[in-house]
Amino acid sequence: MITLVRRVTAACVLSAALTACAATPQPVRPVPTATTTAPSAPPTLAPGPGGLTPVFKNGSRTHGRTVALTFDADMTADQGARAAAGEHFDNPGLIAALRTLKVPATVFMTGRWAEQYPEQARSLGRDPLFEVANHSYSHYAFTDDCYGLPTVSGDRMRADVERAYAAFRKAGVPDARPYFRFPGGCYDRRALKALTPVGVTAVQWDVVSGDAFATDAEAVTRQVLEGVRPGSVVVMHCTRSAAPTTERVVRAVVPELRERGFRFVKVSELIGS
Figure 1: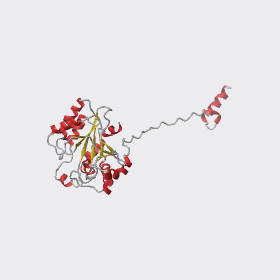
Figure 2: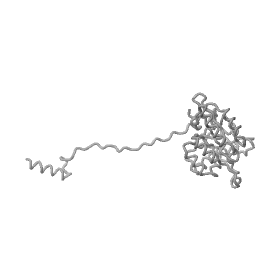
Figure 3: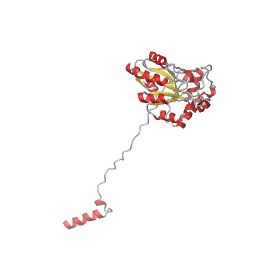
Figure 4: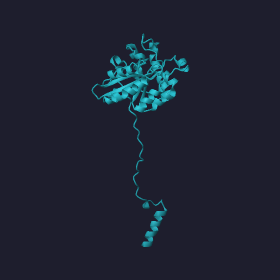
């Protein structure tokens, strides 16, 4: 009997064809697969009356002492010759100061600026401290009589904004925000209607820094500090030639506002709060 059992056992081991000796099937365990969570879309405002592009000026006054510093990276479509001649429409010192001070910020960039400074545009767009938003391609006004700016015709407004987004992508900005700042801050119902299909939220401000063409950094600093309230959006500029004092203003304003209990955020956080 022992010999027979051994023979049967050996046969079972050697012959997979003998189903009587097959091992009990084990349940197949699914191979774990990595799951990726799609990044949430940036917060935007619902369309305004009549489906017009919504306009955001400031955040909540009661949800904490937050403030958003915003910087317009201005360059008009026809300023290439001036840049080639040595005029600086960028401000690396300002960006370095924001990084050193660890200040989140929103940069409203023109497409022409991104074309002129693609490496800087890409660096800003890939740095989690910043978010890049749209300031038009050409920095032409969307209304008549806007600080002497050239104007873009009504039938070209949408194309101008979309061209800016295309310039950002070409420069390597991976995720420009669906926020738009009108050149000069000038807009009307026609402009809001023209941009409705783009799906952006227009972002204005409630604190004018006064840094454009200013030479007195202390005066600009005072104006910002006197104007900031919880939820404020401060407008400044990221162009050395047109706003030479801005870096000094930021280095003075940031520690003072932090001392007052303010926390710096991007525009997207204000809109989403």
